[in-house]
Each structure stands twice: as structure tokens, then as C-alpha cells.
Length: 168
Figure 1 (cartoon, rainbow, N blue to C red):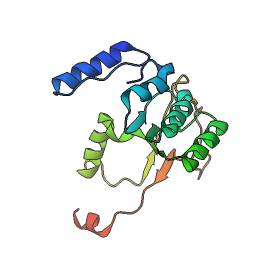
Figure 2 (figure 1 turned 90 degrees about the horizontal axis):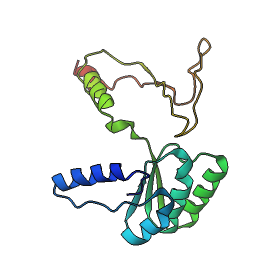
Figure 3 (figure 1 turned 180 degrees about the horizontal axis):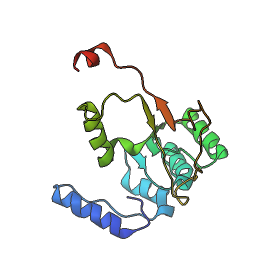
């Protein structure tokens, strides 16, 4: 595990041992190549500050790995171009994911929606504030009348399918 703090790795390893799994070695953030050489992983999951993504993605792609990174893929357009070129011309595979699916509060919200507790959802607005040390901090936007706000900030949901209507 590549992490600036040994305590987080120790906590992870303690939980792994409780589950009957082996722990993982600790590597400092500037030792990505060393970590990849020593551990020979099949895949690389990147869940670090946005400013580190490009370096780690490129290292994983150079090693022919399946690389899974959180959004934002990179911090700059130049980094994005380098990453996309490496993914296109190398043997590694790049996937960009968003980690909200497994947040406990979002799982609970999904259960409430699926159970009909709050009625039919027709619009969702995500107001997401990012710590500036992790990525770009977007200022709040007051949408104009009829404006849907920032891309991905507001999403219109499709009407329910016929089997969903029949269940109600």
C-alpha cells in the first residue's frame, strides 16, 4: 500500500489479519516504482489526492497493469493527454471510477428510494465540495431560471420503466 502515513496501513493490516488475510507492505508515496517492482500486482487502484493521479496512472500503465483511478483522472489537461496517450499505446488498461457507490449514507439513501420511502425521484442535485488539497474546489453556482447547473451537478432521471410502475 502506497500511503504517506504508516498508521493507516497498520489499521488496514490489523483488519486484514482479523479477516484471516495477509497484511500488505507499506510504501511511501514517492516510491510507486519500487512498490510495483516489489509487489508485482495485477492491478493498481488509485485513491489518492488528484495531483498524484497522473504519476501513479502512468507508472501502472508502464507496467502493463489494469489501472483503476478515482475521478478526477488528472489535475491538468496536459496530464490527461499524457495518460490517454499511454493508455492508447501501451498494454495496460485504464478505468476511471467514482467512489460514491459504497458510501454508507448513499447506500442508505438507495435503500430508502428503492423502498419508496421518499416517493418518485425526478431530479437529483449533487453539491459536492472538494478539499482544495485533494482537487479543484468549485465555487457554488446559483443557476439561472431553467439552468441545470454544472455538468454532472444536476441529472434528470428517466421516467420509471413499466415494471417499476406495476410494483407501486
